[in-house]
Length: 220
Length: 254
Image (tube, rainbow over all chains, first blue to last red; front, side, top):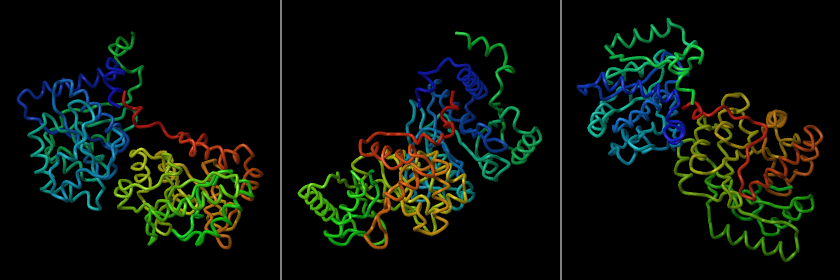
């Protein structure tokens, strides 16, 4: 899996595009006010998880220590991407009041992943819990950035809740698929709780609509 | 033919009770053209206590007897592992007999309330290095009603095994219908006997083979009665040629 990104195709246009986003985040965060970043989308299948995994990976190139937490307790997939078991994870830490270190999976140099664990019947309660917020605070002392994968905004209220304790929000939008109004609505509901939306990532843009820059980097 | 699902091993579950009954069943299988049999006693089901020593002793007794009588058959051990919806993790961790020492594991679920997280359970088995074979898949009505779940289970790399008896109207109508739906769509990887005794839950592999060849072609019949099974015995991986898994999420990354 890790080879897929760095050693197999480090100069792919898409990898470069993600690097650009990572650099932008770094520039906008010179004072280190942003530590926790959530990635969400208006609806399902907009490339939210792809975006967050790639972002977390390129962020490690900045010599940063990154933690990726799967907070999508409705339909978790992060473990599948990194081929990890999901029998133990976040929910176990919270329920057993365990220390978090044994539950981390180092999937890439500088990148740790915390999977959801067995999905509980009351995801909203867990997302809203004081213990989760305290756990995140504790973990953020050991990492430069913590990324949260969340469910889509227009589906459940979890991402709205998460946005109240995430320092920054990135929206993933699939080109040509998501209606403008839906994205607007999602952004509005995030803004209502004063979420700090720092940008959007557009996925699946057809090659013909990309700039010359991408054409250039694909000539090799 | 090769039988990968049988309760022939005596005295360890609801299958054969005595040594003699086991021998009768083995002989019947051989007579009807079976060359390899895997004994798959229930594991983690109801109160069939797993007595490893007894399983091993009874297995060797049968193996020896088969050799003495010059029966032309290879015998192997396995388990039919019952996976709970909530403590599957500990079952996977604690270990069971895989089929003939391969990476294939025969798995069953609760038939009355099949777990809704069946795809997740298959994923976890897979990520632990095993390959799931769902025993008598035709019994899980939920897979028939919920095609998305069926697809998800197949996407997790699980193979489906169907009982010979279900193909032949020997079990209830729904199971028969679902079994033929799976066969028609070539989603079945294995047919097995799931034989328990000589009276009520019998051996029907030979009749089922005829039925499948007649209805779905000899090639497919050979594949699911013998060739796929050889992959299990030889410990090799194979993909069901008839199901194209969806593009993995992985391929979306760069």
